Structures are given as structure tokens and as C-alpha cells.
Length: 286
Image (cartoon, rainbow, N blue to C red; front, side, top):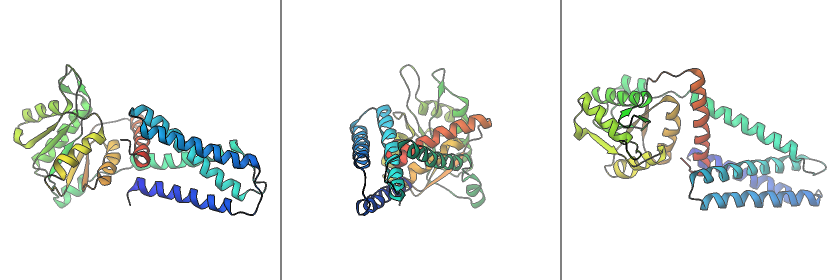
């Protein structure tokens, strides 16, 4: 009953339902219509297989996006041709319908992210504790200092630690040659704030949110039988982070940083996050 699985199953069942309706419809279908469905389904499936065997994330994203678009077009065409008297395919019309439906879903998803509310007030008001706070990595400047966005994440993690909401902090994020990893930069800052090094767990190999979540899941949450964690990041990033944690069966609370963003920047980030969430839901790409 995870979000991505539910959405995929709904689309698959709709595809199956209207395929059977068309197959057992007594109306005569033009040969062009039949060929259209055969060719479109073959092409979309081919793109899915290519995506599945590709090891490059960029290629996986491109091929998966094409598959999703073609499959959505296929579903819309199955629906429109069933209710059509002529049973003829109108590709341009169906394509416009597909874009409109996709746009509606995309905007709805953006609004979910834009209006996402973290659990900070719930945590404070109910004096909720967790096994650890997870500070997700962000950009490092000059090779050894946190960017303003990253510093806000570090500060919020320190605040939760100081208020004894979490007894330890997990610092995530890799680095490139010649500079400290994101996790090491965060560690240095928190030690400078006065946190005992023994209360800091460093993960410095990951380069994406999903890799960071996998590390927490496999090396900490399951291994030490944790009951609850707190994800610390920017507000627009928390919706996807929570979805990743929920899919991996981790009881998660979220806390947003105090990073000031303009409305334009927030919307841009929400659009990017919405795309990332969709690819995770449908293809497990994080």
C-alpha cells in the first residue's frame, strides 16, 4: 500500500480494464487502430526494458520518462477509442488529453510539496523523542565549509540535539577529490558547537538522497532496531525524503530548516522535487 505501488497498480488495472472492454467490444475496429495499439505498446515496453538494463541514471530517467508518457497516451487512447463510434484513433487529440491529465497530476503534486508541513510543532508540543536525527547533506563551499543551506540543516540538527529530542546525529553526504565530504564538514561544525564526537555518526560515500536513506536503513535503523528517526532538511525536500523513508518501512518525523527562500526559488525547488518524487514512485529512481 505504498504510494508508488498504489499509483502503478491503478494505472495497470485501468489499462487492463479498457483493454478487455475494447477486445470484447462487438464494434469493428479499423486496422490502423489495431496497429496503433500494437506499435505503441511495443515501443513503450521497449523503453521500459532499456531503462531497466541501463546503469546510467540520466539514461534511466530519460527512457523511463518516455515510457511513462507513451503508456499514459496508450491508456488515454484505449479510453477514447472505446467511447468513439468510429473507433478511429485521433493521435493529436489523445496526446493533448494526456498532457492535460499529466499537468493536473503534476500541479497537484507540486502543491503537496509546497504546502507540506513538517512535524516540528508536534515534536515540541508532545515532547516526542527519536533514536537519531538525520542531517541530509548539501553543498560544501571552499572545500571545507558548509553552504548557507547546509549550515541551516546543521543548526537545526544541533537544536534538536540540544533540546534532547535526539541523542545522536547522523551526518550524510559524500565529497569530491580535494575537498572534505559533506558529512565531515557537518561533523567539524557540530564538534565546534560542542557536541561530543561519540554522538555523531558519519556517512561520507553517498551522492543522493536515496543513497543516504539506504545507509540509514541498512546500517542503523534495522541493525539497531530503531523505532523512530527525524529527517532534517529544507521544507521542499522533506516530502520526498519522507516518501523514501516510508517506502523503506522507517517510522519518520520531519523537521524543516529555517532557510529563507523567495517564492520564486521555492516554486522552482518544488517543481524539481515533484519530478523527483514521480520518478521514485513509478520507477524507484531517487
